[in-house]
Length: 346
Image (spheres, rainbow, N blue to C red):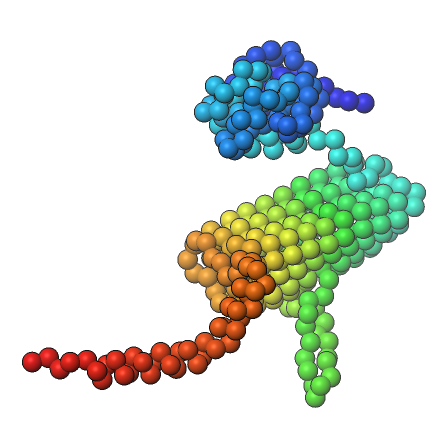
């Protein structure tokens, strides 16, 4: 069943200035180019302002500076993108990960369940686990011994949470995420690898989101800690004893090696590699494909990824790169010769 909202309802929900017909009915959010008269759209970037002239949207969310360029129904706000995000939450049609407790779920008798917990088919909840109010556990999930999951947290299908993990309130885990697996700890004895049991935990704060197939390893001795409001994209590796500060975001396929501490409100792009046993201070932004090999102590933007070029250019540049040592020696020789040829001051 399609749910409809009056434009006046939507305006009130995001504290927007309504210009137009408040009784107009809206069914969903769409882009300016694809919207129909039953959709609401938004303009967050003024370079797309020309699309306002051709959109069929029933209403558009706009900033005050863009509002004069659209004559239809509009909701005027300070930040259209934030307003869009809030409306998207209100109008979200994503189904629940689970409803009720399925008869094929395996829940140990010692598990403590809060109010309105839902557990889907083939999920396994082991002994002494604690699930808070309104927790949703998707199909095929595993929740290990003595793990705690806070109120309103959702695990989509096939998420694995190992033993003694602590997860806060209002968290979201996409399918395939693995939380609390062993860190990569081994000692080498004459060529033979001796496994070091990983006896630390994973501690995850409130309002944390973890993407599909992302892995957060448990600590070797101390804990791996993910603070409140951290967002992790898909296919990320967080190694043992890493600590990630509040409000930090990491994009897909990035890797953080063991015992690294990342500060608050950092933004780390995709395919970034961060070496272990380092510290990154608050407010750091790291661009895509950057390799971090030493600690960062000052906020700012850091990069090392090399932009693409044609294969011919790349091969030529790599040939030059191989000869850098020779170039440096020749330059030093020229500098020495230049110094000898300088005229003597009278």
